[in-house]
Length: 307
Image (cartoon, rainbow, N blue to C red):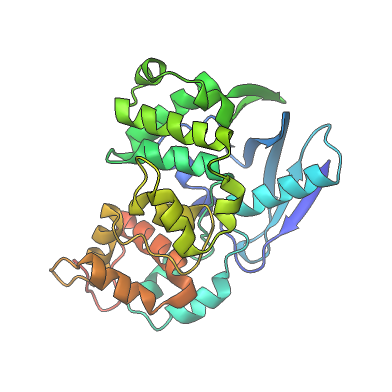
């Protein structure tokens, strides 16, 4: 099966998928030169596919190949997953119009033109990744996650490459704390992941319904679970649900990014960050993404400001 997708607005694939090179290996999301490979889970069926791209930033064409798969529900599921992974549903042109009036965002638009946030393909993958990344650096988190995928996921051959299907809830629910400790997870994180998976298997947590719920309900449901706080809920809304009106102001890196671009030598409170981000309305998620990348690249606000 072959699917061709076009982006509504600019798309810089290299910068959009940069996270898959930056912090280490991700066996479930393989980025190799000009091809991206992944395995779709459709019930008990595993469907490997690859995405290639061509054309200029203003007119990128994504070509998806899923050998042996047929169109219909599988084609729609793969299309939806690819759109998420490449951030195709973000209103980048609208964000750029808004950002021109902001002294910190304006230079970032010029430097990072076409960059889009890549969304987690599934809610379970997002939540497991969030738990893994709690209070550790991202390189260590990626290494732990890679070990988890190889231990509980399933390898699938696609051409000459092997890509791993992310573990399903049943596999994670059956995991023991001792097994996960051997993957360098802390005892608490092992328990959090196992309990999350068991809640999904028991029907106590419907991940699809959660992803479709209101922001308030998502925050309430996630923070009611052991080991999941507002930090996880905000990132779930931003990087899984793709909500535009979300700013994870409690995240340390986000606070540093605001200090870098707007602090003028003083740290901003979480309340001040949420207040400033609120002025961006439905473009908060995009703005935060640009501020984070801009800080990493050392880009300063127009006029030479910034921390």
